[in-house]
Image (cartoon, rainbow, N blue to C red):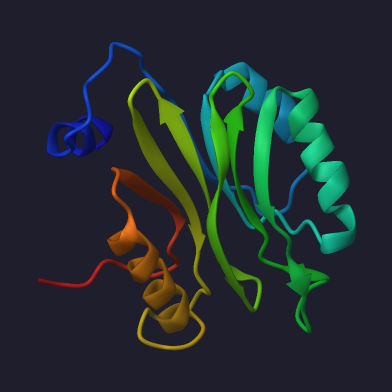
Amino acid sequence: AVKHVLAKSKAPVTSRSVSFLVQNVTSWRSEHLRWLNELSCDVIFLQETHVPQSGTSAFVSQLLKAGFHAFVSPSEPSTVATNSGGFCVAARSHVNAQAGPEYRRAGCGYVSCLIRFKGWTLALFSVYLQSSVGIHVEPNLSILSSLGGHLASLNCPWIAAGDWNSPPPRP
Protein backbone atom coordinates (compact mmCIF):
# COMPACT_ATOMS: atom_id res chain seq x y z
CA ALA A 1 0.00 0.00 0.00
CA VAL A 2 2.83 2.41 0.83
CA LYS A 3 4.52 1.73 -2.51
CA HIS A 4 1.21 2.51 -4.25
CA VAL A 5 0.87 5.80 -2.34
CA LEU A 6 4.42 6.79 -3.19
CA ALA A 7 3.99 5.82 -6.86
CA LYS A 8 0.95 8.12 -7.12
CA SER A 9 2.69 11.01 -5.35
CA LYS A 10 4.91 13.62 -6.91
CA ALA A 11 7.40 13.17 -4.09
CA PRO A 12 10.89 11.98 -4.88
CA VAL A 13 11.30 8.34 -3.93
CA THR A 14 14.05 7.68 -1.44
CA SER A 15 15.62 4.38 -0.51
CA ARG A 16 14.55 4.65 3.11
CA SER A 17 11.89 2.19 4.27
CA VAL A 18 9.42 2.77 7.08
CA SER A 19 7.60 -0.07 8.85
CA PHE A 20 4.09 0.30 10.25
CA LEU A 21 2.01 -1.56 12.82
CA VAL A 22 -1.76 -1.15 13.23
CA GLN A 23 -3.19 -2.72 16.39
CA ASN A 24 -6.35 -2.63 18.45
CA VAL A 25 -4.79 -3.26 21.85
CA THR A 26 -8.10 -3.49 23.76
CA SER A 27 -6.61 -1.70 26.79
CA TRP A 28 -3.01 -0.54 27.01
CA ARG A 29 -0.74 -2.55 29.30
CA SER A 30 2.97 -2.28 30.01
CA GLU A 31 3.55 -5.63 28.23
CA HIS A 32 2.73 -3.86 24.99
CA LEU A 33 5.98 -1.87 25.28
CA ARG A 34 8.11 -5.02 25.20
CA TRP A 35 6.10 -6.32 22.27
CA LEU A 36 6.49 -3.04 20.34
CA ASN A 37 10.25 -3.05 20.89
CA GLU A 38 10.51 -6.64 19.68
CA LEU A 39 8.71 -5.71 16.45
CA SER A 40 11.01 -2.77 15.70
CA CYS A 41 8.32 -0.76 13.89
CA ASP A 42 8.93 2.87 12.94
CA VAL A 43 5.29 3.95 13.26
CA ILE A 44 2.45 2.47 15.31
CA PHE A 45 -1.27 3.11 15.04
CA LEU A 46 -3.04 2.02 18.23
CA GLN A 47 -6.77 1.86 18.92
CA GLU A 48 -8.77 1.14 22.07
CA THR A 49 -5.96 2.08 24.41
CA HIS A 50 -8.54 2.88 27.12
CA VAL A 51 -6.08 5.45 28.49
CA PRO A 52 -8.08 8.25 30.17
CA GLN A 53 -7.12 11.93 30.07
CA SER A 54 -5.61 11.54 33.56
CA GLY A 55 -3.27 8.80 32.29
CA THR A 56 -2.25 10.43 29.02
CA SER A 57 0.98 11.97 30.35
CA ALA A 58 2.15 8.64 31.79
CA PHE A 59 1.22 6.85 28.54
CA VAL A 60 3.15 9.39 26.44
CA SER A 61 6.13 9.07 28.84
CA GLN A 62 6.10 5.27 28.52
CA LEU A 63 6.14 5.52 24.74
CA LEU A 64 8.86 8.18 24.84
CA LYS A 65 11.06 5.93 27.01
CA ALA A 66 10.50 3.18 24.42
CA GLY A 67 11.71 5.58 21.72
CA PHE A 68 8.38 6.80 20.32
CA HIS A 69 7.02 10.32 19.92
CA ALA A 70 3.27 9.85 20.50
CA PHE A 71 0.20 11.81 19.43
CA VAL A 72 -2.65 10.66 21.65
CA SER A 73 -6.40 11.02 21.96
CA PRO A 74 -7.56 9.81 25.40
CA SER A 75 -10.47 7.50 26.09
CA GLU A 76 -13.73 8.80 27.49
CA PRO A 77 -15.84 7.64 30.42
CA SER A 78 -18.42 5.03 29.45
CA THR A 79 -21.60 3.67 30.99
CA VAL A 80 -20.73 0.16 29.76
CA ALA A 81 -17.04 0.02 30.70
CA THR A 82 -14.63 2.08 32.75
CA ASN A 83 -13.36 3.90 29.65
CA SER A 84 -14.18 3.75 25.98
CA GLY A 85 -11.89 4.25 23.01
CA GLY A 86 -8.60 6.08 23.08
CA PHE A 87 -6.20 5.95 20.17
CA CYS A 88 -2.81 7.19 19.08
CA VAL A 89 -0.24 7.33 16.34
CA ALA A 90 3.39 7.20 17.41
CA ALA A 91 6.63 7.41 15.47
CA ARG A 92 10.13 6.42 16.51
CA SER A 93 12.04 9.38 17.86
CA HIS A 94 14.48 9.29 14.92
CA VAL A 95 11.54 9.86 12.53
CA ASN A 96 10.84 13.56 12.08
CA ALA A 97 7.15 13.65 13.19
CA GLN A 98 4.93 16.54 14.19
CA ALA A 99 1.29 16.77 15.25
CA GLY A 100 -1.36 16.83 12.56
CA PRO A 101 -5.15 17.21 12.56
CA GLU A 102 -7.27 15.34 15.06
CA TYR A 103 -10.97 14.84 15.77
CA ARG A 104 -12.60 13.16 18.74
CA ARG A 105 -16.20 12.31 19.49
CA ALA A 106 -17.58 9.84 22.03
CA GLY A 107 -14.21 8.10 22.51
CA CYS A 108 -13.81 7.63 18.75
CA GLY A 109 -12.21 9.70 16.00
CA TYR A 110 -8.71 10.11 14.65
CA VAL A 111 -5.33 11.56 15.54
CA SER A 112 -2.53 12.17 13.07
CA CYS A 113 1.06 13.11 12.58
CA LEU A 114 3.10 14.38 9.69
CA ILE A 115 6.43 12.75 8.93
CA ARG A 116 9.01 14.78 7.04
CA PHE A 117 11.35 13.03 4.69
CA LYS A 118 13.98 14.70 2.57
CA GLY A 119 11.89 16.91 0.29
CA TRP A 120 8.41 15.58 1.10
CA THR A 121 5.88 14.81 3.84
CA LEU A 122 3.69 11.77 4.64
CA ALA A 123 0.52 12.25 6.73
CA LEU A 124 -0.49 9.35 9.01
CA PHE A 125 -3.95 9.02 10.57
CA SER A 126 -4.91 6.55 13.31
CA VAL A 127 -8.67 6.04 13.05
CA TYR A 128 -11.09 4.48 15.52
CA LEU A 129 -14.80 4.24 14.68
CA GLN A 130 -17.64 3.16 16.95
CA SER A 131 -18.56 -0.48 16.48
CA SER A 132 -21.95 -1.90 15.49
CA VAL A 133 -23.42 1.31 14.05
CA GLY A 134 -22.03 1.49 10.50
CA ILE A 135 -20.45 4.43 8.74
CA HIS A 136 -23.67 6.36 8.01
CA VAL A 137 -24.62 6.81 11.68
CA GLU A 138 -23.20 9.14 14.34
CA PRO A 139 -20.56 9.46 15.59
CA ASN A 140 -18.93 7.67 12.62
CA LEU A 141 -20.59 9.92 10.03
CA SER A 142 -19.10 13.07 11.61
CA ILE A 143 -15.72 11.43 12.10
CA LEU A 144 -15.48 10.32 8.48
CA SER A 145 -16.75 13.68 7.24
CA SER A 146 -14.05 15.49 9.20
CA LEU A 147 -11.41 12.98 8.11
CA GLY A 148 -12.44 13.35 4.46
CA GLY A 149 -12.12 17.12 4.71
CA HIS A 150 -8.64 16.90 6.20
CA LEU A 151 -7.49 14.33 3.63
CA ALA A 152 -8.82 16.44 0.75
CA SER A 153 -6.93 19.48 2.03
CA LEU A 154 -3.55 17.73 2.17
CA ASN A 155 -0.88 18.40 -0.43
CA CYS A 156 1.00 15.21 0.40
CA PRO A 157 0.48 11.43 0.38
CA TRP A 158 -1.39 10.03 3.38
CA ILE A 159 -2.21 6.75 5.09
CA ALA A 160 -5.31 6.28 7.24
CA ALA A 161 -5.20 3.05 9.25
CA GLY A 162 -7.03 1.78 12.27
CA ASP A 163 -10.07 -0.02 13.58
CA TRP A 164 -12.94 0.92 11.26
CA ASN A 165 -15.37 -1.38 13.09
CA SER A 166 -17.37 -1.75 9.92
CA PRO A 167 -17.24 -4.17 7.00
CA PRO A 168 -16.27 -2.69 3.65
CA PRO A 169 -19.22 -1.68 1.46
CA ARG A 170 -20.34 -4.20 -1.14
CA PRO A 171 -19.76 -3.24 -4.77
